[in-house]
Length: 418
Image (cartoon, rainbow, N blue to C red; front, top):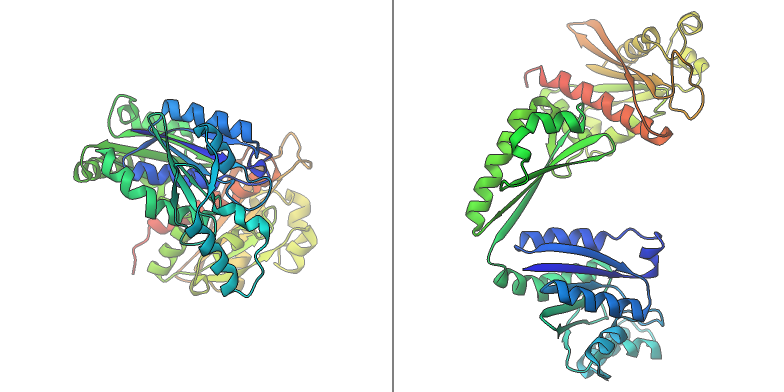
């Protein structure tokens, strides 16, 4: 069985709001054994909603609608569903009583427009909303079961779990499990070549790749009659993916690179400091987004201007004048100074040309030098590497920060956890 998700709202079609509901619904439907055939996004227009519902009900067994159930004049999903049914809307007395009680409990006056939320197409089943005032709706359109829920994510999720999930799970007859494995440092084509036959489109589990902000993620979908079989095959394929990609894999799911680095530092009882020019504190910001990062992140320097590199960090002005701020020699000195001044175990330093201006034939936009300093028995050792990163200014800065964190991750993997 398949599903189609319809999201209603001008704010969605205008790009003012990101549609997170559809992503969440697709993931939950897959967990319940139902694939989503399409996402449809329509404005607050009754005719558009009617067309979308009719089209979806011809193509899928489940049609899930979010949005358009509020009390204002642009909330038109109820009216559209009544038009699809070819009948009137009627007052649902229990819903009206709940809405009236909601306002009474809060000492607020209920406006006449709020009564609209208790209207439902004749013959539709009204679904209780455990988190809000707008009830949901369920009705049959052709071969499809159509469910309509509010667009507020908290309300939508609660209603889905209460009213839809048990029905869909009971009729799916299969289990679909997914996993995302994240890599950094190798391109999508290299990942594809390394995975080889694992990416054949005729195999189950299905393996594919996506790219976002420099991270190549391997997505696995395991689709089998039973959960036990789906889980076993998913685990087997995930293990094969990790074996083929080795240390390029840094996490699964939504675990960030900074979290992984923090866990490694914590496990090895190590600390890190930063010295940043082109990223202007972005590496430090990523690290300190991790809870309890004060246990292993010491602090850092943002030395954007050359004068600050000298005055705040101690990089000789003669060195900057001779080699240029974006150079191996300068980034090495930045890392060494940060390491010594922080008395930490590691230091990350970055300097580069983020753009859009400032590039040259020798140092084009996207040129970034990253230095990794480490304290080995009281001796400072610094490794430096040049990268040419692509994208606009924000992308270069983000990719530089992640590349620096990945350098530290790979270095930490070489050490034991004592």
